[in-house]
Image: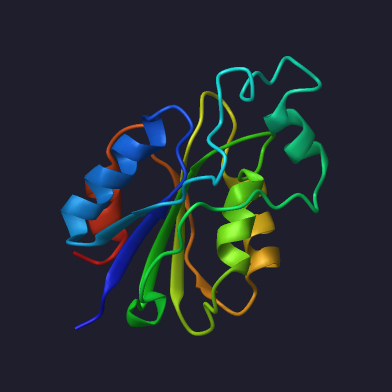
Length: 155
């Protein structure tokens, strides 16, 4: 039997709710990608050109540190990767996560939450950061994460 992980980064709790719903629907383990230095409200102010999130997103090489590693990553065959859309792509901390493990031969399924942007820019970026994984098509899941996750797993 394959093992499934739902790994997610959530700045405001929206993506966390979708991740928990998806994990419960497919019987997956859950791992939160938490920054070593938590984001403050000021850090997330995208209107401020000097806010932490803005500076990170302007620098494609930025890799914010993750607080704790996911344990036993090798046991998972399928990994759902969830995140909010920031500047039309995934937040840089998601890149840190993808570059921290060997996903060769694993199936990765992205999902995102967004107030208006699509997921296509993030899908392209994710594949570039983790080319040895087998990527499935992603989806925005502002609602209906359980039904989508089951469909993605063929359940």
